[in-house]
Structure formats: structure tokens, C-alpha cells
Image (cartoon, rainbow, N blue to C red; front, side):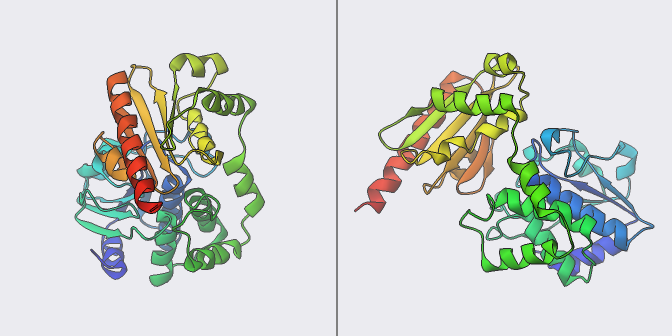
Length: 319
């Protein structure tokens, strides 16, 4: 793994730096990308610093929007990915057209795709790693830089409730808060849902099937989303909803895509599920991952695997 100093030296070398994050972004994906980009722009005003993606920010455009990045921009450029575990998830497939690729991430390093990398699976958010990098290399963290980074940390820690949250996380959050960012605005933007999204959350609970093991699943169809005027990205608001049910220990939300395949969301309160997602063109954190399913047969297979992992976990932990 590369050090912060080694990464900084490469940043100093290149006149053009293009930052990527993962597709279907969450607050940490956009926050880590935008926070690093803004800090680089402030420190290196003569460099071209660009945020690349597929304009799939959706409801998260309040954090940051993408630049108009052309393929020609990659010639002789440094490319940095943040919060992106593997190449299929990188938003904008031109990421490999630059001169050098650096990966900054907090997911398990199952795909060591970059020329240089800094990966800390113990960090609760890529945005926290970016703050650590900026502090280590003497960057000024302004209010503009702090805003997306704080949003990323709040998003990926579940408002500081997830197990990876540490004392250091609160120290970083304190530093960002002291820049004067509007903490209430960020919290509200992350938590607010539309009335249609609230109805979709209720629909997920209505559809939810719970296995005796504590594993559960729900399937959202294209018709469900069209009836409520909900986009694919807006449907992501349903993913954490089952976690409020005491009886549910691990769960899938399957969201049908326009082509009839499914976007698969894995969540868990304790059983490790990211190795299951990896079997289905996905991956992520131990308790929060994503994958894809080609059809209903694969949907059934995925849930059967979650049931098995959940059974084994609680059999071993209730002895």
C-alpha cells in the first residue's frame, strides 16, 4: 500500500487530475470525490481538477455535480478513484485512459486495480481517509471542502451508528464542523424523503418476507416505481427501512431495472454478507453490499445464500 506522502508527490507531478467515484453513488462516494477535488483546486489553482461520473448523482446533487470531462482530458492525466472497491463499479469507464491510477478506499481490497492505492477497511468512510490525507499533507480544510466530506461521513456511518465509527471519526467530524458548515442542513438533506419515497418504503415493508432464520427480502418492480413516479436511484431510500424491524437480522431489497434484471441490496445487523455479493458481480462492506441478479432464479439463489449465512451465524452465536 502506498503512503500519503507517495500519493501527494504524484499529485504534485501532474497538471491534470481527474477524480472518479462509484456508480449509483451514496453520500460518501460523492463526498470523498468532491472534498478531495475542492482541496486540490484550492492548493493547486493552476492544475486542471475534474470530477468524472455518469451524471447519476440523482437526489445527491446537493453535495456535488460532475464536470464535463472529455476523453482527451485523460491524456497524461493522473486519475484518482475514491470509495470504489472494484472496476465494474467505477463511474465513467474512461478511468483507465490516464497516465497513472490511484485508489483511495475503505472497502476490503479484493480488487487491487490501481497503480498506487491507500485502502483502510477499518475506516468507516472514504471521506474520513480523505480528511486524514489532507491533514497529513498540510492542506487547508475550508468550509467548502468540509461540507461534502462531512456529508460523506454522516452517510456512511449511518449518522455515527455503524460499528466502524470510532473516536477518531468524531475527532474528524469535530474538525469539519468547526469550519462553520451547516450540520442541520446536511442531516436534513440526507434524511429527507419525498412523499412518494415514503410510500415506497411502506410498500417494501408490506412486501417483506421473513424467513425463520431472520433473513428477509422484498422485491420492487418497475411497475411499483412507475406507479409512484419513483426513479431507480430514488428507490435506494428503501434499503435501510427493514433494519428498523427487530425480527429482521439480514435482508435483501431487489429493485427491478428497466431491462428486467435486478439491482441487489444486501444489508445485515451481524452476519457477514459481502462475500455473498461478490458471487453476483458485486461487493462492499461486511454488513452493507450491492450486487446484480439476472433473473428471478438468481434472486432466489441470492436469498437462499443469505438465509444460510444468517442461520449459521446465529447458530454459532447463540450456543
